[in-house]
Length: 107
Image (cartoon, rainbow, N blue to C red; front, side):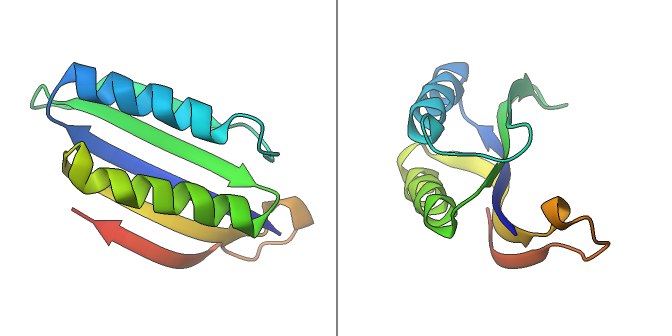
């Protein structure tokens, strides 16, 4: 069993996106993860800067920590639009069992 946090966020400025990017890398650094962690910076079709994350942790505590960190940033950055979710995943077990979404925040 693995513990995932995923988001796709639209921010006001590239500087705010880049700050979130740096903060997330520092927050995740050193935590044991499973599989490939994807952190992406981009731009949506309306020209807004975007930031995405997909990370799977070995420990539930790490998932909860990152989720709460991101939740706290939604108003502080602020995030214009986006979705943040945490999941329990079974990819490492070799079964066809789907992920279980634990919590979702939508802006």
